[in-house]
Image 1 (cartoon, helix red, strand yellow):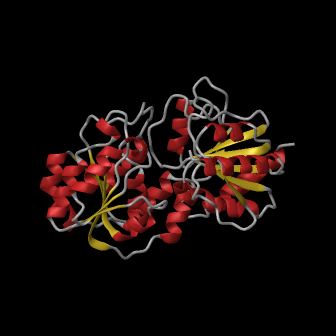
Image 2: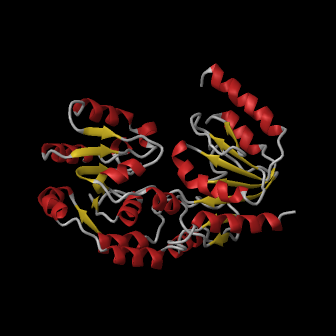
Image 3: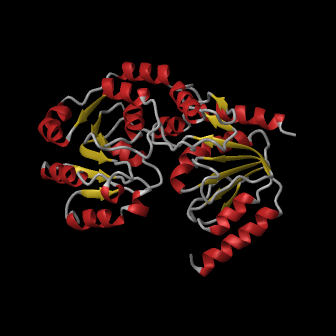
Amino acid sequence: MNLIKSLLIIKNLIKILFLDFDVVFFSENKRYQSIFKNLIIDLSKYNKKIIYLSSDINDTIGIEEIKSFYIGDNFLRDLILQILNCKIVIMTLTDLGYHQIKRSKNVKKYIYVFHGIVGGYTDTAFHNYDIILSPSNYHNDLINLNNKNKSKKTLLNTGYLYFDYLRKNITEKFNAKTVLIAPSWSNFYKNFINEDFDKIIEFLLNKDYEVIFRPHPEHYKRSNNFLDYLRSKYSSRKLKFDNNASSINSFNNSSLLITDFSGIALEFSLSCKRLSIYINDNSSKHMNQKEINYLEENFKKFFCYNFNLKDFFENFDYVQQNNILDKQELLNFANSNFFNYEKNISKISAENINKVLKLIN
């Protein structure tokens, strides 16, 4: 970290020490702003004092009455978060207290917000949270399994906040010759990424498709050698890397999504009403995968294709020619599996958080 950034963080630390606030939002990366922003807007309507902290220097919330502070990603960040004095802290960070970021003794309640529909979670993912904004009964089952024999959690059945953002920004127009590839990351892969995507990219480019490649944020930390290899290999071809904070432009441009085991497939197909393909090598596991993953499995069964690499190459043309999903069936699936799917989830979440604030002395 350079000197200018360090001085900025120290300056922000001093400001935070002398501020009076009720709620703190902490974001690890600008990508999570699309989850938080509408919730912050709705919560601010209750005249609560809110500040926004981020480890990303380019991540400011852009709401006039909400102060944003850059706090970096080193020991100064850890110090700031540990000396917070407020009623509520809201995060998307799992395993709170089991790594450098600890709970502050002067914070009354910690609230966890899901930043993905599905994913791999460690045994300790939710242990140190008091309240969780739950997207579905599946997530309640997951939390209760994870939280076995630990302190009781308050589960608020609010819904998945990112659906609000998608609903407001998705368009029906797309490019039939554009495919989005969005891999997840895993400790079980070499370089933490499924390198078979190289073969898939080459296959699609040879068929004159434009390919948008959207790595997981962890890939930029752990898989840079492979990413650089792809950039070099396809530098003169129709491969576009998407590292934007939001996936919305890639969603709107793409006719199809390909992933391995990322929850982005549910987000894409439910919001865009277009097909997703899972590439399954039967060996991929995501962290401990301590999940009863019936939500994703039901989604795959009715709305996706699940191929190994050989089957993908053989069946891709057929899939593209029959890329039609029943919109009513998708809507029925979403309404039966997610809380408040067609409602204003940010508003509902803000109402619930305001009730919690009223109970805190």
